[in-house]
Amino acid sequence: MVTRGDVAAWVAAYRRAWESNAPDDIAAAFSEGASYFPSPADPPWVGRDEIVAGWQAHRDDPGSTTFEWSVVAVEEDTAVIRGVSTYPTTVYDNLWIVRLGADGRATEFTEFWVDRNAPTWA
Image 1 (cartoon, one colour):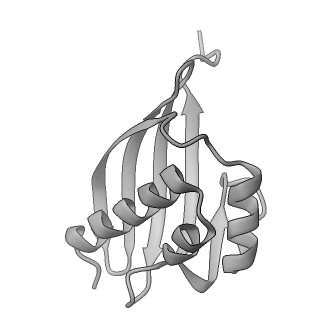
Image 2 (cartoon, one colour):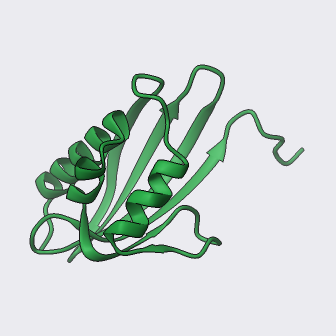
């Protein structure tokens, strides 16, 4: 059973990877056979090597973002996290679905994001 503390520890690991872009930090957040969906419609990056490669191809410069987050729900091994990612010129609203293994690493991660500057319904 995943706890909110487990989720906080995982988000801290993810954020450490986000800030460092170090392959070891990225790999530390994900189980060996994990699936990372960069958006719900994209095919996943599967396995640590592919996750590290995908991350490196889309990396952010260290120190270029701030991230605020809160847990929306936790059920069994799955957490839903709401976040706000602030970049120098863009703010994104995020919703993450994270499935955690017994070792605290993500076995599945799906990222939903919306650019606040993008056109919306009128």
